Length: 549
Image (cartoon, rainbow, N blue to C red):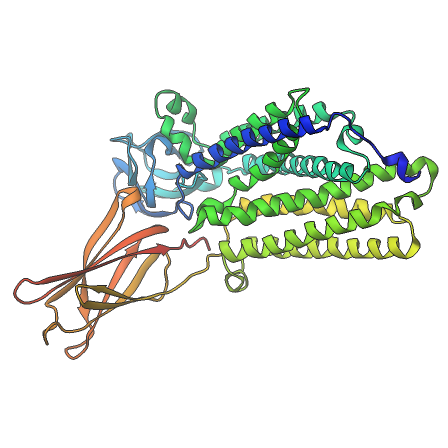
């Protein structure tokens, strides 16, 4: 097969079409900006909900049946999204319900209980974190005397999570391969090689419909992991709850883009733009909303998605071209194609590696990945090894291609393509897994009305953290009292004032333990009161990282 056999000139791709294509790109850009702005309204809290305290306590044996159940979390919980089911020692449910009281966010959830007989009970609770992740767990307590059964008689299941990972992997893999193949074929067409119209002559609409079905399956898998009655609550007027679920909004946008994709007869720019949006959309559905600067972290994720798409799309294009040339039992016709292919693969792989390193740097730190080793770190290591293997295979086949003046390693490119799909699976799995938190320190000098306060926190992390405050005497007098208030205005949370203790009669330093109950942006107010009623205040904001370990 010579060069002309893989040339395809599309006359419809004229200057008039290009102008129309630009207008389509403008429309798609507006859609993407609108999609992005919706996510600006979504909550960006940095860790999943954690249960801090229970009443009755875990494994306690109470003398009398409790009249209520209390669960205290590390962050305000939307009560309409919280459910509890209590099972007896025979795994029979004795209570199912939502919290009592007002339907507002609260760290403390309270449930009125029916009369309970003597025996062991298992409490299964389910809530939704402010980042949209469903969180559930269970614990046991006993009334009067513990009995056999309890927790062991209530089987938990991760089927919904496994189904979600499977559907996400399938759909995201098809999206990236489809987008990359379409874009790579378009680039090839500009160099007079086979374009998308000829290469993807059949099966385009079938593929889009398959992706729509897969997106619906993702939606079903996700909602089955959420509290029962959620959508009925939303329909009953709580539409604001949708903003608690960035992943759900991502699926809605993905479905809209896919429906637009199957519209026939549109100009080339329409399809190029939609495939670009579809390849970038999965970047909005992972851990990105759990970072300090979410929208900064989105940029390398989008680049990573597009680069992976181009890499896999290029490999798919090469595989399809090899299939077309199989009849002649020779691959020497691809000699002219090699420089074009290799250059674009080098750009794609370079962007994959660079954006991947940047993502880890923004999400955590390489030190935390190693020191706080967890499942996410293991998955990252496997992803790195697979990427290195893909690069090695690419280098091997490129050198052999160049040396032999023809392509002779079709099996190697297929293996590389399969490994690329495995990398996508690992990426989806990582997005469903807690990651090690990079803990930073805080050391700053705050100034107000010529008065200074040297403030230091060793660990900007959830939990009780000790703050050291250095305050110089005012006109030779030390403050009579130093207090600290902490708050999260975005979530209506506040604590304090907390009294700071002086480190010694001659010391200018004060110490206070501050209970940072959840991750996110906290506002600090340090107040020093002097003899005579004079008051000095210093304020600052700090970001507290979650403790997912």
